[in-house]
Every structure is written in C-alpha cells, then in structure tokens.
Length: 378
Figure 1 (cartoon, rainbow, N blue to C red):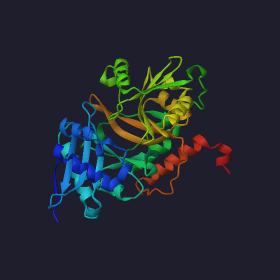
Figure 2 (cartoon, rainbow, N blue to C red):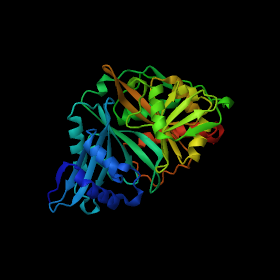
Figure 3 (cartoon, rainbow, N blue to C red):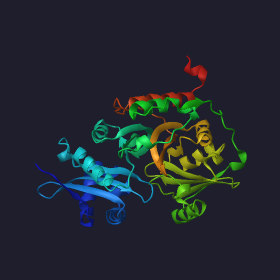
Figure 4 (cartoon, one colour):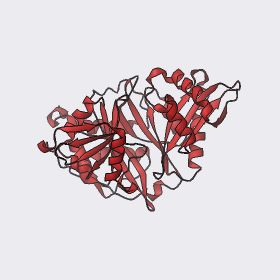
C-alpha cells in the first residue's frame, strides 16, 4: 500500500491532533501535537518543514517536522509519529529522511538534532539509518509516561565537521565524554588535554534566596535588553519564559521552564555563566519547587571557567555537540550538562551499542561527582 508524503497545511491540523493523540495519548508534552495555535504558526510562518503521510483512502497516518529559527543554522527533528496501524513498514524512516532532505536542501542549516526516547530501540534505529550520529544521553530529561531518559543525535551538512575550531584543553571531568564522542561521531579529540578542576564551589550566601519570575512577556523583553546582540545569546530553539534572579542582584539566569515535561533549560546567565558560582544549589531547589526535576545548560567546550563552575556544582556532562555554532567560517563545539533531582533508573532504557560509550561516560562522571572516593574503591 502506497503512502503519499506531502507538506502539512492548516486544514490538516485536526487530523494531526488526532494522530498525536492516537500515538501518544494525553502524555505528549509538546504543543506541536496538541495546541492548534502553535501548529498553525509552524505551518504558516516559514520556520518549519512539516511533512504528513496519508494512506490511499486519505487517512493521515504519519507526521514529521524539522523546526528552525532565523540565524542559528540548526534545526530540530520533532513530532515524528506513525499511526499504530502503519508501523513496521519503514514509514518512520521514510518521513525522517524526507523531511531532513527538505530542510538541508535550503542550504541554511549546518545540522539537525533530535532527542529520541529510549524506552525502545526503534526510534534510535530510525535516526541512525538517516545519517544521525549519537551525541549523548539526557537522563530523566522529560516526563512522558513517567520520567524518561532521552538520547541526543545530530545529522550534519556536508563538510561541517571538517571546519571545527580546535579546543586545546578541557576540565578532566569531560575526558570520558570526549572519548565517547570520538567513537560515536568519529572525531579525534586526542590533542585536547585534560586539566584538573577547581573542586567544590563554596555556597555564596549573598546570592540566596533565588527569586523566580514567571512572566513570559516581561522575561523576553528583559532578556533582549541584557543580550541585545544575537551573538551574545546561543541556545537554539529555546526561548526563556522565566528568570531566576539572585536577591543581591549578582546574576540573572534565564530559563525555558516546562513544568508539564518536568524540565528546564538554563538558556543564559547575565553577566556571564560563571556568575552562578556558589548559587546553583539554591537555583536547583527553586526549580524543583517550580516543577522541574531536570535542568540542563549548554556551554562552549572552550569555556573552561563556566564548565568548572557547573561541574563543581553537581551538573554532569551528558552530551557533546560538535560543530554546533558557526562563527564566521569556523564551527564550535558545545557541551550539554544536566542535573536531575530524581533517582536515575536505567533498567527500563534500551541503549543501543552506539550509545553505550555515552552511558559509560555518564556513569563515570556521575560516580565521581556524587560518590566519595572511598565508596568507589570498595
């Protein structure tokens, strides 16, 4: 039976919502599959590549989207869904390949990334078959059907990885992650040396309590006032809707807070990422009270000072995104660091062989962060 792929149209929204409900039930935490206003905007404003799949009788049986934003040269594969009655025939892989080819065909993207559920191995196979490379694991990253771990993958445009800017040294805590990336992405980090970290960061009493402001319009205006130049802010496809401010005014941390998914992305810190030194414990307490059991941040691999602050405050290196950001004619590597307030349980995850080096790297980093050395040696 031939399934026809075609661009999504506004008149498809009702059928798309029904598809996402049949695939995910009420547990799908992304507005793309449930909020008609968001869906209409993505279909009409030119920032998304959205393909649908219809069976010969006209029933909508599949969907896949690559969302983009002006200036970042990065896309994200989201909303991949195939009706239960049409699985097993390669439709998910066909949709993934087609929507990525369309997105890269514009010439405006250096990479497309995907966060993939690991409750089964199937989604991992789909992206790998379509040229995606494993970048890491994000433990406890989202609340879907319980607390789930996601895997991060990326697909690159031709020649992008060859234009990376080299990094001379990184904190020792990143060594295992770089070794995993050397295997998973095929990049040689042998010339990047490790350097001892700064150790525990003392609590900065003057930075507490942390005040949380959840007023999206105000937060966005304030964010743009503090970071007026596009080059001053970089966390693709995340818009801050909350700000965590130190009571003494020493920093403002801008966050994309999603209590429904139980997650938070720390998008930017003013005046600089390392300004949160000593205050991250209080910040995490505030986020947990706001419903986010998982927090992540994105830092340049070359920003040793900021990396050491987050590593010393309980954030674990979870993923490495090589060649993530283009500056002039060079591309720069970034690191995802994460922290979760829930117990991590990998027993229900289906970690493919490609991801196992990242699992080992995460476990090694988590152990060195949270277990005393005398406990590890027993």
